[in-house]
Image 1 (tube, rainbow, N blue to C red):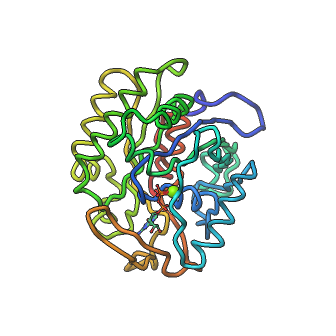
Image 2: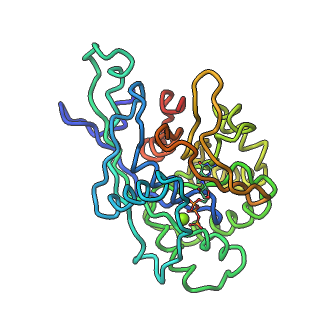
Length: 301
Ligand SMILES: Nc1nc2c(ncn2[C@@H]2O[C@H](COP(=O)(O)OP(=O)(O)OP(=O)(O)O)[C@@H](O)[C@H]2O)c(=O)[nH]1
Ligand SMILES: [Mg+2]
């Protein structure tokens, strides 16, 4: 069944791809998400993900960022809005998933064909999202919105700990969706996912496997905007939870973070123990953006 989603090739990996834009408020965790994904630290051998490989220079730069900053227990610098969207870094990554059954039973050969998810992804500065709220006529903004039209998938990152900003996010998102639909050409249906970040925080962690429920409970107005957009037939929406930093320990897991601040904007933090750094939930939204299907094993972490 799953097979039909991919181009049929015999022994070559199945290919699926997406052009992605990552949007969200300042400090929602966009760049950290991308850098953690590219770095893919301490991979769990039972994970369906076999490898994450950068396929351009920008992708390699992401890995250096992760090594030079995150692994030293530092934060990444806030991203600046470039003069035009075409000057922005376009990160290309190839994510290879083990064949559908091979990771469940390493001895089984059947159905063990690899799957490649090829993505090119731009991580917008959070300023873009703020400008949507407060500077509707800004020409730079128009340029960015036009760039967004090339995307088949939009990832809307929201710090799960910033529930008090639901109304602001909903307004920003509404403006974004209206501009997107007004100028929509070419791509007829898009996928947009809402990704709650920083879900190693305990009140999010306990519900991490019910992303739609947590999203609805914490960001009802944002969810309503997304649902209305979907009902109009403009595209599909789904929900995910993740953490770029992850947990420490198995029996009594605790967040692998040293908190720097916590307020209505959410939390800022650095990694506590870089040697045991293992993010979760990073690939599940990409799989969905590429294929339109949820991947049960990726959803588990
Ligand atoms: N607790 C926790 N903090 C995180 C996580 N991901 C990012 N952060 C922290 O959130 C803050 C902002 O992260 P960035 O990745 O710079 O956010 P951004 O969305 O790229 O921000 P702008 O570039 O300003 O738009 C930093 O303090 C990060 O260390 C996470 O998974 N958990
Ligand atoms: Mg950034």
